[in-house]
Image (tube, rainbow, N blue to C red):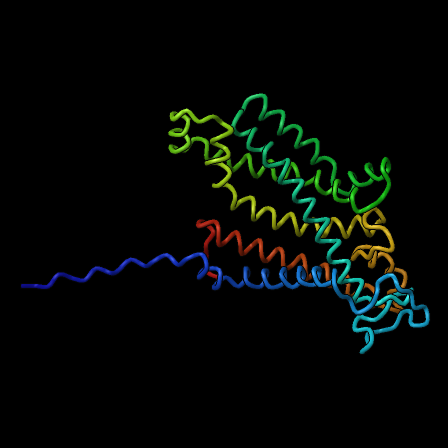
Length: 290
């Protein structure tokens, strides 16, 4: 009597944690992001030097044991300024993303749920906001209220609203025809309750990935606004402002631009890697080997 051939056992789907450990993009991005966040938190309690202390006798010093990243044209320690500048950049980008999520997501979900005139009004409003980049919005806001970090946050936050509105609307529109949504409607649930209980939990992954991307763009936008004098004002250190101060001293002191530039590049790179890794981990259709 012939033996039955053994059937291959199905491969178990690895858990999210195991897939995260195998995703190099996610691990690298997470490590860099945690490092920058740790530096920002540390700057609240300790920096090598006081960033408001001027030491003209030691101005434009290159890297040394006393000043690892050198000093600027006022004799301030560049490492200390980068540490303090990191918390300013992170705070501006974080609050700006929060504004985009807090306003854009409800608008996008409402547009998907109501359709018709509501959908059309939200999308046309998004088009109008998209016509004004963060820099142009900051210029208009500054003309009325003056330059400052708060106005930079408002400008970047306004630009983030239509981004999250479009992501939320697209995700919600794909879910509304699903059978479990129809079952919820038959059960008597209203549009608002369905959105809270069924739509938002299922588009949270998309919003998280988009939030990571917008956070990186917020860092760049804050640096750009500070570079043109519309962001954080002296004596508050800012990476963009440090680059502006360095542009006329590139030949005699290239380190003035090197270190804040590297801080921006590394931070944005880390956030982009983190967003790419999260997209692979949270979207099964894009789950590929790294």
